[in-house]
Amino acid sequence: MGFGAWDLGFQVLGPSKNMIEENGHPAKSVETVNLKVPTLRMIAWEVTRSCNLNCIHCRAAAERGPYPGELGTEEALRLIEEIVSFSQPVVILTGGEPLLRPDVYDLARYGTQKGLRMVMAPNGTLLDAEKAARLKASGIQRVSISLDGAAAESHDRFRQVEGAFAGALRGIQFLKEAGLEFQINTTVTQKNFQALPGILALAVKLGAVAHHIFLLVPTGRGKEMKEEAIEGKEYEKILHWFYDQRGKVPLQLKATCAPHYYRILRQRAREEGKQVTPQTHGLDAMTRGCLGGIGFLFISHVGDVQPCGYLEAFSGNVKRQRLKDIWESSPVFLQLRDFSAYRGRCGRCEYLRVCGGCRARAFEQSGDLMAEEPLCIYQPGGNPAAAS
Ligand code: SF4
Ligand code: SF4
Image 1 (spheres, rainbow, N blue to C red):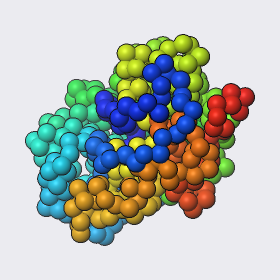
Image 2 (cartoon, rainbow, N blue to C red):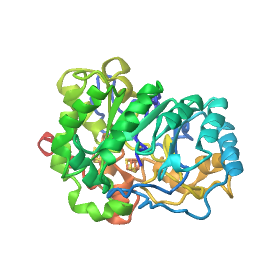
Image 3 (cartoon, rainbow, N blue to C red):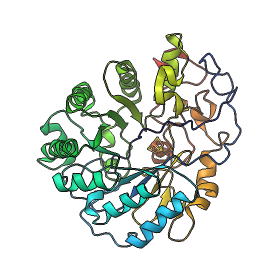
């Protein structure tokens, strides 16, 4: 799906003396004051669930479709009006495969006219010169393309479609010719984590503006790959490696849905005697690990709202409710914003506000939305042995 983070340039969390002290050291106690209604900064909108591929990790287990009950054009345009009535988020048009929706260009254009930053997450295989030009003309500002291997064999196995790698590269070429910015998204699993340096090098070579790595969340078809999920210790090493790449490559790096990267970033900065500021750590200093329900929401093909696409916690439906009301008062969102409601190690953790753990993985593992993130090995209290 590739809803990965985009350039947000925002501060999710207001300053708090109990959060991260000015010298970058974590505070001793976790503040348990609820967030007020935060600003909605990003929406992933599944404009259709239909897809031409059959990726193993797909959250939506999407197939060709058609899927009944998808929002019609009028409903979709009204939704854009609803969005701008109270917010100015980045809107990621995703799927399924968003290019299978014929009016997707109209939606992109309308959002653009309304002042929204419209971006798209197609799989790349359906792009051609004409579609890329239409995306550009409709105001799409960035396109994400997923590469899960540095070569055809590994990527195609992951996507379960022979030719998907070649198709993605061809799609990228069309984007470049149309003058569209693109980023590479990579879902990291046991099978491809060793290829990460190669994929990053490829992203640089292709001229991507960013490389976002995404840690597998075992939901949807991804459940079948549970055994391919990275274990906590390996995960930690990968995130340290990712931190080490900062400044070494000429593109933006972002660990998406790997919330404890933001804990690691602060631990590493502390070791280096640095403060975490926009000057030293760019956008990473201004966001947090899990944004679901805090700066971000997901709208499904039938209008269901969730904190994110991987967390199937029904929070409302835009056909029946105003999005603003859902954002401001959905019980699920209110719970996620209540730092006293987190349990287990996350609940005791001094990094809770900058990390939060993956709520989808917690939910998948335990059935409890607010349980501890199962893939974090950190022991709250700053036990460096456990974190190494
Ligand atoms: S729960 Fe949070 S970290 Fe996990 S997939 Fe959703 S947005 Fe990402
Ligand atoms: S314990 Fe939870 S909040 Fe703390 S770093 Fe790990 S995942 Fe994040």
